[in-house]
Amino acid sequence: MTTYAPPSAGIAQQLRPFGQHPQRWERKRSRAVRGGHVCCGSYGAAGCEPVLIRERTGWGWIDWTVPADGSLPEQPRRVAVFNPVATWCQRIGLGWLARRSAHRIRLGNVTARPATAVVTALTLVAAALALMHGVPLGIVLPAAALAPLLVEHLPDRFDTRAGESARVVEAEAACRYLQRLAALHTGLVQAAVRGDGYEVRRAVGIGHHQLFDTADLLQRHDTRSASSELIARERLMLQLAVQTRQIVTPTQGGAAAGGHDRFGGQPPLGPHPPRPRRRPHPPAGHTAPVPPAKEETNMPQDGSGQPAGEVYLLFAHEAYYPAAAQEINTSLVAAASLLHPRVRQPDGARIYERLTRGRRPGEIVPLATLTHELDGGARWPEVGDWEAVTADLLQLVRDRECDALSLGLPDIARGLVCSGPHGEVRIYDPAAGRYHAYGPAERIEVLVEVGRQLTRVEAGCALWPGDGLLAPADPGDAK
Image (cartoon, rainbow, N blue to C red; front, side):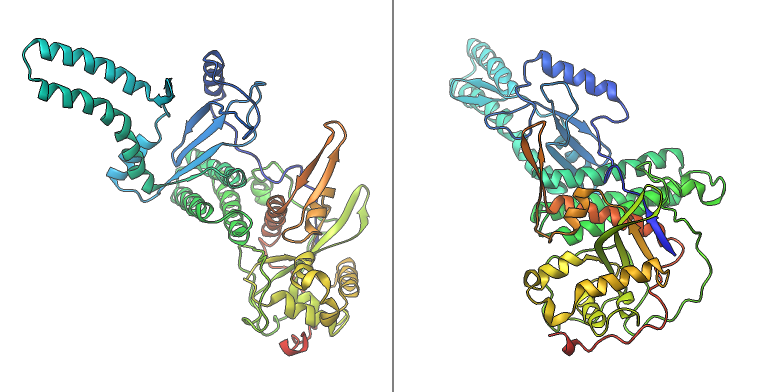
């Protein structure tokens, strides 16, 4: 079964401000424009402090900037996620924390809350009246000085205490990633409104926990160092979204209800339907693939760990066209396909050993990641002829001697797959007269999309690596 996946128009649907109530966004944006707070339209421009519009959600809040050109912001400025197991008192504090941030006013060289200025004025009037009524100065003066200080500083103390039950993410790359997860979770919440079943409510709870744990992870690590964990979490959220949609949507025509995912994409159908076949027992050391798929960007140390459960190899190749206007330029196969007797040996077995060493079950590993781990390709001769091996794998796929997920990736996505975990693809935009850079964060998005396609393909059964597989190579053979 060779399954063909069409190129996707977008990696993930982006969460937009007040998606269910766009009129609220327009009202708040108009109020910000009338108030003169909008000073720029770009994220993080020098010397610019744009107004933030806070959108409160059931799981936290999102702060959006207001672009000066009237368009929707591309990504949030700040995302906060509440602790899903917060106590009653903590929920009250989180409600306080999610309040609309007050604008500060400038008084000479200092800034203060508007409430502080109001309380100061009222305190002076009250102090004057108290003195007129014979209240001692020793009582009036401390009270008049203490009231404005409490109003100015107590909210910060409350925010700090309540913030212990929330995770706030502000880094640009982290917000972009959490935005995609929040879009998936929003889909779960909307599904829970349409179908009030235990499974749906449970999915919403799991999604909230995933958001909180991811925000906590992004507070402690950047997206590059935590890329493996982020891919795993996003794939789990994608699986939750697809399964919840299948539960809520009435099944019309069998699997037709699950045919469209939340991105509006069609199911990846091949030119030939799957046909029954005998499944061989997997070789020693193999188990069924267990999602989520992950990519480890750190090079495994020699001799560390045993071969993992099913791992997947993703490699680009010369494009071919199995049908009119259908380009296939990248393929994903089970790692065990490297042990097929029609693949160049012992090179395939050695690459299999290197590919599975220290990996986690279900991990998708691009060939470029192996090249990165082998000192940028300098150590490939010690392992095997990767060009001959991938050519043999492609021939296996085309002869239907093993299963594969065949992809027609766009140029940028394919370039990212062919680059290392820390590589960068630069595209020149003649209209704007500048370069656009795509790096590790966008590469993660491509791998997540591939993982989503793989999850859908493997809904019935795992990818078949082929018949008559050889025994894995002795780790000592791959120096």
